[in-house]
Amino acid sequence: MPVRSEKITFSGHAGGELAGRLELPSGKPRAYALFAHCFTCSKDLPATVFISRALAQRGIAVLRFDFTGLGGSGGEFENTNFSSNVQDVVAAAKHLQTVDPDAAGPQMLIGHSLGGAAVLAAARHLPGVRAIATIGAPSSPDHLRGLLADNQAPSDADGARAVVLAGREFRIQNQFLEDLDRQDLDGDLAELRRALLVFHSPVDRVVGIENAERIYKAARGFKSFVSLEDADHLLSDRNDSEYVGDVLSAWASRYLLKESETTEEAGPGADGQVLVREAGAPYTQEIRAGKHEFSADEPRSIGGQDRGPDPYGLLLGSLGACTSITLRMYADRKSWPVDRISVRLSHSKVHAKDCEECESDSGQVDRIERVVEIEGPQLSDEQRARMLEIADRCPVHRTLESETLIPTRLA
Image (cartoon, rainbow, N blue to C red; front, side, top):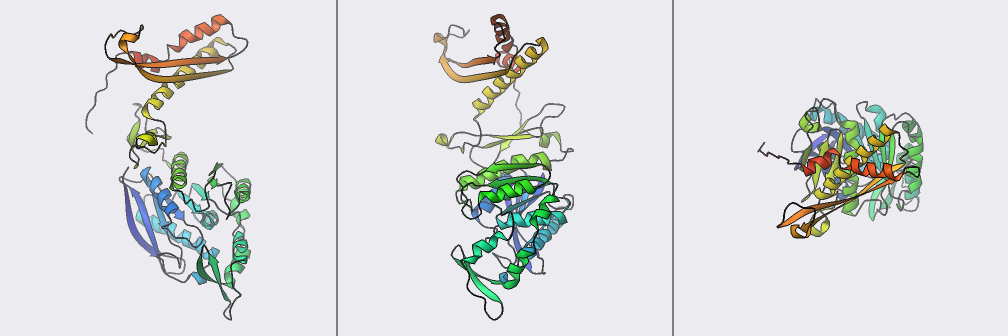
């Protein structure tokens, strides 16, 4: 799905002008999200851009913005603190209400590093938010003290001091540190009561994985955790940030989609429709079937991004799933002691003249080999043989072997 990017400005917590970019899908957004960047970063950090655009490709509009005194936003960074960041998040959310009055602001908050802590604290002020995602977030804003301790100069007569982070120098006031002491993120998490997805890398050297554990345990409500394996704190590898975007968009659809969406947008309804459309990358396809969303793609060896099975992989998966479900229904109806059913499938092209089972005698024909494993030590040989016969009654199997019409027209 093509993505549009619009430059916007709005007033921050102190009335100064904040700079933002609104990533929009080509059609009407399914939902709106707000992205808060990491400490001393900006809205233009590559990971922030990639994740925001991945969501927009899935129909979720994302506002990414610069906190006061950073990036393109006005104001002085040294006059800010964690509380002012939270207030900027609330201000950005209120601005989204003016972008699309029907949406009533963002339905999802996303925060990277300290931005993750900020969105967790801001959620209590935004009742319209239904889902929150954190990426490499600290379990307490006070985590910053440890990062600043070895990288700050003594305070001057005005109570300000210079700190160096990621090779860049910033000035902070004593009130910045005092504000950290006043935060109660555990209390915010206990009152969260929203769907929460925690992304964290077990090898994050800036914010340790133990922070993800504390956030997960303290949060109340539906919550999930996704390991980012060997990703660094800033998700410097584009594959890592695009992975976050893909997982996040699929997870968010469970909480953000409205029940009243049209059949075309929501997928199968009374007429059993499935919507397939391009998702931005060369061959990546977004597939939406009802409330379920997944991807199809081609392997990297032929120019794809390998973000999902190829079309034949989906075809084999459909036949395998139908076979297993059909056999389970039959076994349950017969009250047979079947523990587990597995189906392995493979697809190939064979020469018709070499195929004794084929009606054609020229060219090539498609061959799908299916191996069914039925676990159940108390099953008799006769019962297993009967279930093998039933496998051919799977509706998808019958569709593949029958004469099928596929009329195609332009929309």
